[in-house]
Length: 349
Image (cartoon, rainbow, N blue to C red; front, top):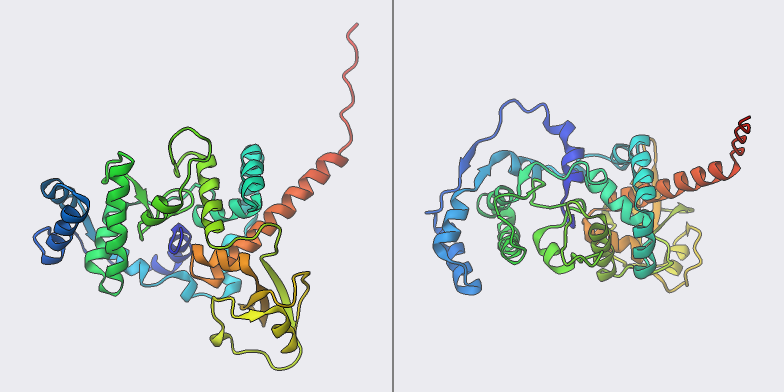
């Protein structure tokens, strides 16, 4: 999802399972001044019927567990080596390779059209929703109303997303109380927030619909469209490992920005392999292993993935899963090519 997705809920589950009591759940009080102001704005700006919108919001349930979940994102609570191990499992890699085989023609077409390799389109869905298997169990309406009206820290953002969701439901002829998603309101196999659905989702197979729940052509084409919008560059690398000779930077001072250059990093003692020009923009990425700190260097395509979710851990997980998928697929192809031919059955007499 761009920004927040089921990947976080999955990684967070081990941290929240020990909580004793379920947080409070209650129907949204539509008489509240902030809710009334929202209804008035939607009516004035987008011509929603106030009575119909009031009825819709009256059916929303605000949930304390949503606020608890979003207040403790996994990227801020666990180190890279542990985060990586949650997503790069043999079961997940096998599932991704199986989906690749199933959707090969679609993936090949979209990759050729957009320049985003198939393994990265798959890896996004693998990290977000385990390839569409876990797309969230919260009603999107409940998640967005909870965060818009009962989470002051990010109320402005989620109020905008609630607005976009209601517009999306109207535009796509969806019942707003039906779709399910993450605790933050992200939807479908790619976990797009409502604003991202409206802005970046595309019809990948020409059937006149944008279905991010059950149509892989739409899912992969929409992910590619999102990454391209944030600067994905065809045939360029994403991330490389680096070694440091001399004093290293303070990991706390690194930023999710292309604020370095290849030549500048090398001048400071970072050694890494790339054919990109010395002037190419880059970023330093600290990756805490179990016993030591590893340094990596991200380029424009790594930055594009961080626009999907503002986390270096997330982007590294996507990159490493993509590489694992490609490696496993190559190994299977070589194995199939080198396998002995099956002996022909004897001719019947």
